[in-house]
Image 1 (cartoon, chains in turn brown, purple):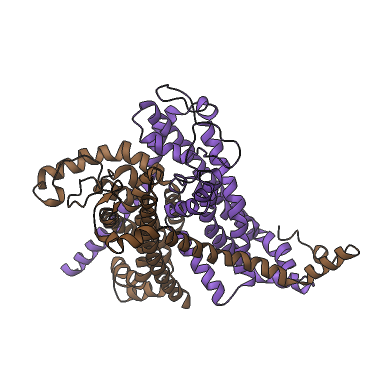
Image 2 (cartoon, each protein chain N blue to C red):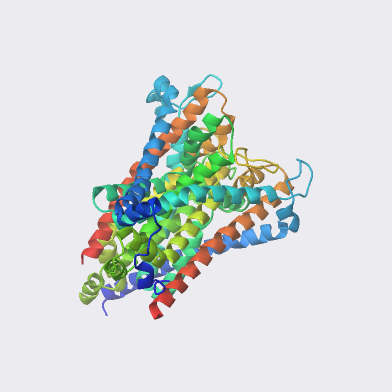
Length: 329
Length: 284
């Protein structure tokens, strides 16, 4: 493709006569037009983002004015009497995401260390393609496998034994149903591992080799050089990947909706059915009849948007700083 | 060897074994997912699945022909709206941009990429469904298009930057204007990568469910045109999986297998095309 472009093709061709020629001539010499067109499309990215913010803000005016900040801290969700408090959903979102991170961070960072430091490059690249496929699995398919395969397994082999052994702790109290905070946390963990893994691996690979060599030359074992030199060097990039994964977990909808149990409550037990912000939007949006109800759901979307934007912004900055440090050498 | 050295070597082996286990476990997850889908879905996929409409509740059989076509239409619409915006924006960033504005666009695109897909659904709902007063393929396509833009934009920029600078200089030295050099030399040189990026972005939004729930909604029949609610594979999987009917569960697995096959074929295929391209350009 590259070589097929010859000088002949690039040479100015004789233009068509008359007005068309003048137009073509102006266009040909006028880089400004190409510049303006592409600029406009680049600017549309900013425009779309502003429009999203405006629409979310504008279309959630009713509950914002009626409930103010109480929206975030009260837990009555009653469409009939138009009382809306988002606390159970915020709680569910935070608990499931925290659970997901608890499981996914050791797995993802551990595997990233293995792929970046120990595995031969060929195998590392092949496996990271497998990870890429894992990241490409649509969330509704995670939900499908979640309700039909994972929830029964989780109930039988994890929740029932835990309940039997530690049932007196508030964390493991109450009836064991399979669906609930724990199930949602586990599905989320599986979904975000690929993100943590692939970004952490890249960040680790960008750490200069002389850092490792210096540590090894001082007599450190391979693990000591990895854990005490390479990982601290890549720390902010790894944190960035965790933040990105957290933002994904907070906003993840389908898989969570299918396994969390859809019951708006603030419960200490991990086995209890809960609800998340994204799940309640997915479930109730088409059923919402009054303006107040729809707008309360849109305000939930606004909350989700604001939280994920802030976390994403932090994550990007963290990854940028590490990447910048890596290339500075 | 002192105890200390033995201990340090033991820790070395233990910790790396643990990281190996973590890797093994993560890789195994993919094969579990594939295995279950092939096992449950493979038994349920039939010719009827691709050619028949869904049957009424209580009747077994039928298929998801309308949802397959529906997903295709939604993706086409998303590509028609989203790809030009992302592509031309990417050309700007790689070829004409620089400075604060470019940084802002790039950063915003990354943020846009991280916004939960359900929020895109709300956005499409407020700008299309509310004014039209009903669900439509158009609204669903728009929601997916907004998701495409940042992905296409960033991948286009990335692959254009990978085009060697001497190619541009050669074109300019021959008297081509800047935009002509971009249009006839730089973009064709990066074409393979750009196309791959577009395919990957389509694979990613093909499985999106949340932004379609209240934009394109669903439909148990054919939906001609663009202004009616339309069925799509992901939404069908969701509704069928949560239904109380055994037969619908089977169909959900079949649809899951078809959707995953579609996503994996596009992802793997575009990867292969890209790697072949790089090898030939290296050796040539």
